[in-house]
Image (tube, rainbow, N blue to C red):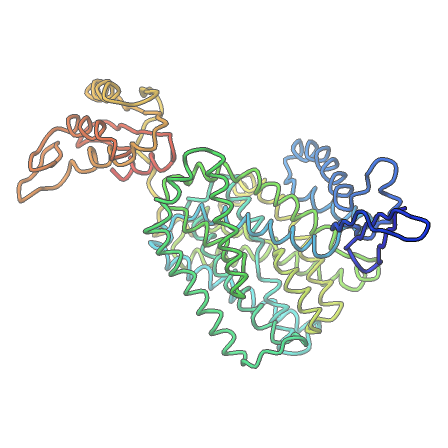
Length: 574
């Protein structure tokens, strides 16, 4: 006989088999197993083994997304809107009730960490540091001005009543969606543009503000028994942040390139190493009571300088996309929209959404004018960040839990977030069309501009010669065409060629031991030709490469292997 003991409050299922004898009962088999029962009745599992509490709603949502994605693609709209709508429908019909709160929170956190990690990979640290004044002025300007405006609106409309709920209300309305912003920059291939780099810096500043706000908010938790004052808690948080930056900087400079050279032997190894590093850093940050999301972002930043960056992006991009889908599914499920709540909060929610989507981008225009940016740069900054963040929902939810927000304030932030996410994603798709119609309004910025976009690589991608593969023979062929004033593009799969061209071509200018070099390279006490230098170093497999033009000649751009864009960047620098 089989006895099943399934306590309603427990997930541990005891399965015990007995052999019934006339006088005794002997246990002949005993097994314990963890089975996820969720809130489903045991009858679901009879007659075929179905009824998994996560597969049913997730499977239906993905099926619906597949159908809606075709429609949204035709309409040139973001699939994020479809994800939110589907999540809201599933949550409203009760299917989402079978998914535990812990599981939805886990999916949300995983999605944010993956997106932030991929965003960190796209950060050009050198360009970021070279433009730190623009980042600080525009970033802090946006945060301070938006925060002041929304705090004032909260007080004047009677939505907020005390100082603390006013500040948190203004901050929740100020933060921009990291997932939507990074997705827009990625889709438009504008991560490395001037406005892209400024926006990335702005998002970092916003994330720091969010982490500080969470540290402050935690002091209002009734279950928080910390004896530290608010100032001490904030100081500890900034100390952890500084320690994280120092540790990752050391890893980036001395460890990661060598470490990931070992992982780069295969795509599978590179994927394992990348995901392990990203979530490992995030997990360690969480273990240290610091933001795991911030840890994931700076883990990506620390990998942005390794020569395997593009390969890493290629391997991790699919799982990141799935993480984004799960995030917005769960976000939609968690949006508890009721007719009563919608009636109370609708007017204020639409006011905040109207200001965020259509009015507040003009703040970025004003900041762009003050900092000498071009009109299109300021316009793109405004239209990319014009939404309320998904992180604002987390902030509002915790504020509501700790009784800093009342129900109305919580619902206002929730509805405003959904509205702005919908309209902002539409604006991202139509940004170029919108600018073509209103760009004339920003002409004063162009006349005053003192900041220029980085010069593009002077490689002519028309009428050039392409070499598939590279060795000593390939070098001779490239030199023949360069002497005929033709640009040469080399496609190669050997990551060990990275430093060879840099030494052979970038060293052609300058002097050695007081003797000026002319169209040559100083190697081991002698000045030799570029071709001879490259030939020698190609034969020596200890060196590696990609790259650039010789003195006064056409370009030789090597691309491929571990990092195609890094190759182009090296050629541009040369």
